[in-house]
Every structure is written in structure tokens, then in C-alpha cells.
Length: 566
Image (spheres, rainbow, N blue to C red):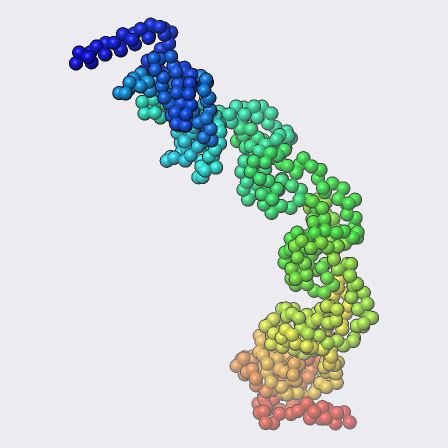
């Protein structure tokens, strides 16, 4: 026991003697002092701090991120005194703890002085990211950027400046913010940018975000909208065709609403409008080349140069009828066309392709003179007639009025009962309008007009028989032959005032009457039962209502009439 006491007392005396000889150096446990590397082995570095013994520090504490040693024998380095003497009487030092303590002191000083720190984002942790500022620090996800990010992986490995939000030394916690600095920087930039904002001002901005309708450009603390229509004079389907996030682009301020702080931007306005002097570039009737950029059901849009498009209407693609432009042209096709018209105000150029092809209408009059007969197939059926395809892709129209001399088409559905698409028919050429590219055809003209001889076949005074086809408020219509009707006016029905036509007559009933007038131009035949009464042929009206078995034929009437003339 005495030996222990003597030893302890001896160490104390030696320590006091050592401290006296090293005045000015604070060699105490928990302090940071400078030392010299006296030896390097595979696992340890020996460091002399001027104490009675040297200390050992693992070489790992002297290696950089790539695993290379950062010190050599004879180098001076700062170390932290962990123990002046451990249980084995050894001096325990730490370079790592010296570094950490120094960094902590620097961070606390910067925090107190509202200064920023620089660090590298090293890994994702719960709730945010870990930043190496010399010691680990926490960067919450909400403090990474001015706007939230779902994927924080893209920030890994990036080096930034951070603001220290909070320090808890006893827990070893340091909370950082990058967002605070970005907001501060943005506000400063915004203040400077607002000083120069105004309509017509040209600035350089950075593409911040891209949408379907345009791109948001960061002008320096304030964002402006570059609408898709103001990106280029030419057609673009999406802003991403011309821009990418992060691009630096020159823009001009089209409109600045100071109250709402809204900025409308333009890019194409920095270039000359291609429509300027367009009529000198593309003269009427000139042949031009272009690329098909869009096809619709009514035609194809052709880019003549960036910003100038022309429309080839479906009717101008071919002399033949084109129903589907997509079967004739494809996007990307290089074509030739003729300039048909320019509307500079509406920014429209009308183009034609068929004008570069032989016009089949030019010699149509010679090939198909009026009155000639043609054959063709029914291409389409409309409510006003049928279109018949003949040679060279030309369609002719047979109007409903030219179907029959006698039958009237009252309901469009009746056309489909007569003709079917694809039916081959014969027709007569009625008219050719080369200028308007119209060919009129007729079917009824294949036969003689029965009205040309109607006056001879049904002379005034002739007796005729027929069936009632309809009863109206003003009289009774009687069909005297297929498609030809005559009218017996109410006053000519031979009825007294108490009798009503609808009570005395019925549709389908056969009656006999006398022709009183024939109008060839108006295609009207007037009939009368009363006229027969006045002639005394038969006072009984039943004599004019015949049974089907005793019907008088047209030939009988005509022979009787001719015989009476003899």
C-alpha cells in the first residue's frame, strides 16, 4: 500500500514538474493541442505532443475519402487529448475528435454570427438528407429547395452552402437549410429584376418548368410565362420540342402586370416575322416546295419555311375526288404545289397540287358533248340526287328532278329504294360547267317526255278513267296512267253543297271524268265530272264510278274521239 502511495506521489511530482517546464501549453484532458508525427506504421501513427510519453492514433484517422494517408513522419497535426494516462499508463490521443471539436466550435461561431457553412450531401436519411460539413448534419426534406421534391436522390453528391438553423451540442444535432439561402438569393435577385422589368425589355432567363401550354422562365427571382405560341414562328407540338429545363434562353417581355406580378414572355419576337413580305417570297401561281407537317380530314398543312404554312384543301389535291387525304399524302412528304392565294392578315396560304397535273375538265366537252350518253357507277347517294363516276375520276350529278318525267321524289329515302351504291347506270349529259367543275346528268332524258304528246293523247273533251290517288281540301287527284295525274276540282265533282268529297270518294276508287284542259308547261291536267253531267251523258253519278271489270281503256277513248271528229 505504501508502495502505491509512493508511486502515486512520485507521478504527481513528475507531472507538476513537467507542467512547469511546459508553461504556455494547455496539456489537459479534453483539450486540443499540436503534435508531431514521429512514426507511421500500418495501423498506428505515433504523435509527440511534448508530454512525457507519446500517444498512438489509428492511421485510419489520417486517411482521406479515397483511403490515402494525409500525413507523413515529421508533419505537425492537431490532436485531442482523450486521456493523459489510461489504465495502462498510456497517453490516448484522437485526431478525429480534435477535428470534430474544431468543427463544432466553427459551426457554433458561424451560427452565432449568422454565417453560412459549406457541405456535401452524402446520403438519404429519414425525413431528409445527411450533409457532411466536417461533421454530420441534418438537412430536412422541406429545407432542400424552394419547392418540394419527391425524389431527393438527385441531390446526392452535390456541394452547397447552407444556413445553420439549429444546434444542440449535447445531442450532437445540427440542422441545416438550403431553402433559406435560395429564398434570400431569390428575393435579392427579384429586387434587382423588378427594377428593370418593363414591356419590350430583353433578358436572359433559365427554363424552370415545362407544361403542355408553355414554359416558365426564371428571370431572376421572378418567373415569367412563355406561351407555346410565342416560342417559335413555326409550328411546335409541345414546348419540349424546343426547350429543356435548365436551358438559358433570351426572352422579351411582352407584358408586365405590376399589380399581379405577372410577366408574359416571347422568344419568337426576337426574330423577324417570316410573314413580312410574304407576297414577295411566294407569288401567286408560283410553284413552291414544302414538307407535309399535318393531315386533317379537310386537307394537308405544308410548311413552306419555318413559320409559314400553306393548306392544300382536299378539293385541290387531285382532279379526281379525294375523300381521305391520308391515303394520298403522309406527314413528312416533300411535295410541290401552286400558290392559289395569300391572306396576310389571317396568315393563310392556299395551295393546290392538282394544278400541276393535266386537267381532265379541259377537253371534257369534246369527249362528252351535251346530249351524249355515258355509263358509270353510283359513287354516293345524297338527299338531292346521286353522284355517278365516269372516266378520269370525274363525278356527275343526277338531280332528283332528273330521275323520272312523271314521278316526284318527296322523301330522300325513296332514292335509296331506286339506286344502290355501286349500281352501274346509263345517263345523258345535260350540262358541263368547266369553271366550277360540275357535270350534270339525267336519267329520264334516256326516254321521251310523255308530256310532249299528252295533249294529243288526252285532248280536251276526252273521257278518261283512272283511280283516285289522293283526296285534298281542294279536290281529288286521279292517276290516269303511270305517273300522270289529273285534278278534279271540288267544283267539278258533281256534288251538291251538302255532300263532302271525302264522304263520296275514296283513295283507290276508280272514276270516269272528262278532260277540260291540258297545260304542257305546268304539267297539269284538269278533269271534270260535272262537264259530263252537263252533256247529259248520265244524270246518275254512279254512272261515273265504274267497276274494275267494265273499265274503258285509253285506246277506246281515243278511237271514240277520233271517230266523232270524222
